[in-house]
Length: 199
Image (cartoon, rainbow, N blue to C red; front, side):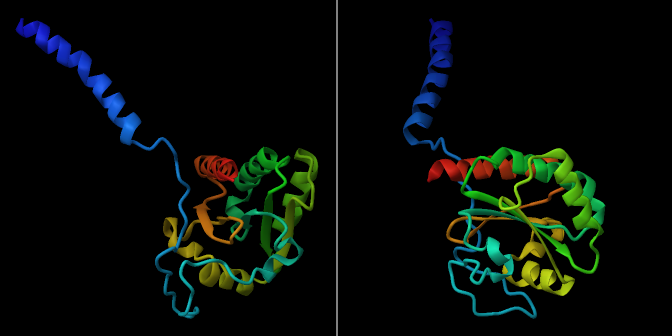
């Protein structure tokens, strides 16, 4: 009789867990919204940022500003990352090529045009590159540093290694990633798909 009771409890436990999770658990993955309750205080940057924080003036995106609901911004400032980053970014581009609401924006330092030329060459050979979906621009390193530090706060994530930032339709920062890491670009793809389904 004791063995029968133990067997009954063993069988009842998984059913109880299942029913509990079904009733009280959440089966959805939410993509984080950064800086909703506070904003970072970075030396040399504005101290009076509105909360929840949204990226305000995006004129630095040029003609790309306001074109897409979801923007993947790529700071291509580290030439050591380029070989892996270009392959990973092309994968992100291919995944969302048919999604009208997603655009990619790569920023290169104007002081060195070799990376920009190499990426353009790679894209022309490897994908159906639509310049309106993946916009490439050069800026001075000083401008790039100011945007990364004071507007997008990339230096605060993964020991300053984040070079990809995801912005949503309200210009809220939704993610930080490293372009040369397959797992991180996979996470970017997954989170973008989730955000697109939420709409």
